[in-house]
Image (tube, rainbow, N blue to C red; front, side):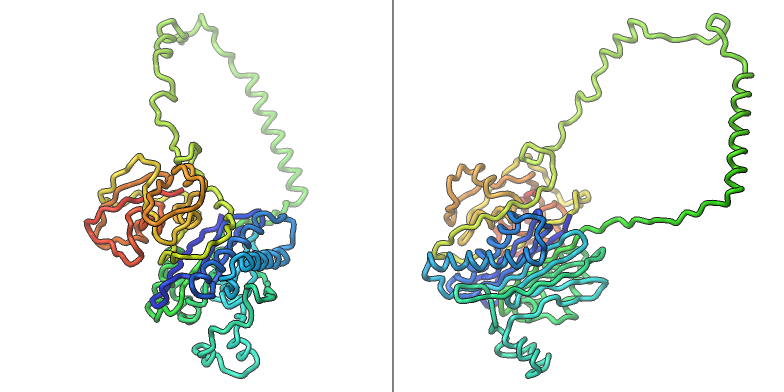
Length: 472
C-alpha cells in the first residue's frame, strides 16, 4: 500500500488552474503523474488532463512483464499521440502543450520519467535529491556554464521550455530509477512550486509536517506566501514501511555434548514410562465419592432455549456498496475527447489517500452520525464526473447510477447525489480547520468543501455546522 497526498491550487495570480495530477494502483505498481499545461484559453488544462489520463490508461492496460523504463517511455508516447489526435479534431488546440512527470513504485524501486520542467524529488533520511533535470532554456545555459545557479534561479527566461508534449513536438523522455528505503517520500510537482521554494524550504516542510497531507498543504501555502505566480501542484507518495526480517546465525554445540544430551533425554523418558505404569489405576465409578453429572432433559431444554451466539448481534458494517469496507484501487481514468472549453477549472483540487485503515475516536465536537449513504452537492462551473469522483474517492459509474445519468454532461447548479460511506454533522470547535476535520473523519478537504458548498477561499468558523462525508 502507498500513502499519497495531492494538492493543486491556481496560485494568487492566474484565474485558471492548468495543472493536472493523478495517482493510483496498476498492475505495474503504484503510479503518480503531474502535468503542467500551457496554451491559454483553458487549452493548457485540456492538454494536461488528456496527457495524464492517456498515460495512466496505458499503464493500466500494459503487460506487467514489460521493462519499467521502456514502459514509462511508451506511456509518454501514448500521451503524445493522444494530444495529436485531439489537436486534429479541435483546431483551437493546435498550440496547446504540457509537461509530464511520472513516478512508478514497484517493490522497493522507484522508476521515473519526464518531459518538460515538472520535477521529481526523492526525500530520504532527511535529504532531498532532485531526480530530474528541467527541459528548459535556462537549464541548458546552466549546463553549458553560461550562467550561475543563482542567476538561473531568477532568470527572466526561466519559463521557456526546450521540449514538451504537444502537436508540434517530438519529445524524447528522460528516464531513471532509484532504490527506495523505509520512510522515503517521492515528491512530484509543477514549476509553480519549484520556482518559488528553495531546497532548504522544501526539506523544512517535509521534515516538520506531522502527516503527508499536512506536508502537501504546507508546501502549497508556503509557495502562495512567496508570490504564487503560477499554478501550484504537489503530489507526495510514501510506500508502506516493511517489517524488518532478522536472521540470527545458529551454531551447533560439539558432537559430544549432543550425544550426552540425547542419552540424558532417553533416561528421562524411560523414568517417566516406569513411573506411569507403577502409579495406581483410576478408581472405579462405584467405589468413589465422585458424583458424575450427565445431561438431563431439563438442562438440554435450557440450553436450547438460550439464544444462539449470533442472535442479537449487529450486522457487519456496510460501506454503502453492499460489500465489507475495504479500500479498492482507483478506477482507470476514461479518456474523453474534450470540447471547446467555456468554463474554467475549479480553483483548487485536493485529494488524499492514506494507507491508514481507521482513525482514532473523534474529539468531543458535537458530531452527530447520519445513516445516509449519499450526500447532495451542487455542480460548480467547470466540474466533470472524473473530478467529482476523485474528490469523493468513488467512481464515475457509481455517481451515474446514483443520479440516473446516461451521459457525462453536467451543468452548473445541477444537484448530484454522491454515494459515500456515511455522513456526519460536525460543529466546528475553536482552532479546527478543514485539514484536521478531514483526518479526523477519514474524509478529504475537497469533499468537505463540496458537501457544504464552500470555495477554497472560504474559512470555517467556530460554531459553524458542517456536513462531513465519510469516504472509502
